[in-house]
Length: 191
Image (cartoon, rainbow, N blue to C red; front, side, top):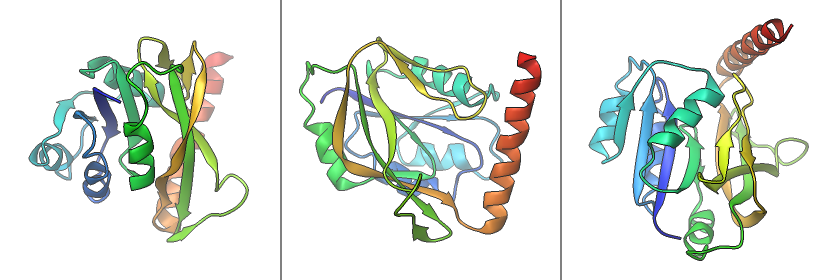
């Protein structure tokens, strides 16, 4: 598949971003959209050759859509700073023909919680639609738990996207509190 842009939204991700960026070396462009990092995330991304845009926070769905619109290429791979593409998944993505019969692809995401990969329930496989032609797909406007909305057929690729969902119980609870606040705000706004 050529050409391909990898798109990442980030904030204070300097500890996680290096592994993520290293796993995207097969992409033609790597774009990091940063929203107010104070830990050197933008500088780190620039040093690795990524294109960086610094902007304000819009909410998860709107931020990912903004990032998508800044990508140089039609085909995009959207990953989070705490995710890594395995070599098997990178090969599967690279093998997608230039004019595929699908407008989007999904693949399994393997979640690691406090150092251990989850093997059951929502832990694996956590199917994620993250590779798509942006002319036929967009991110939902959800403030949290955003998803890709696509108009065309979706294929499935082999290989895993590795996700470090929580390094510690403290980080997990911080993330859950942030998500529950965003969900409550969205519910209140919806009436």
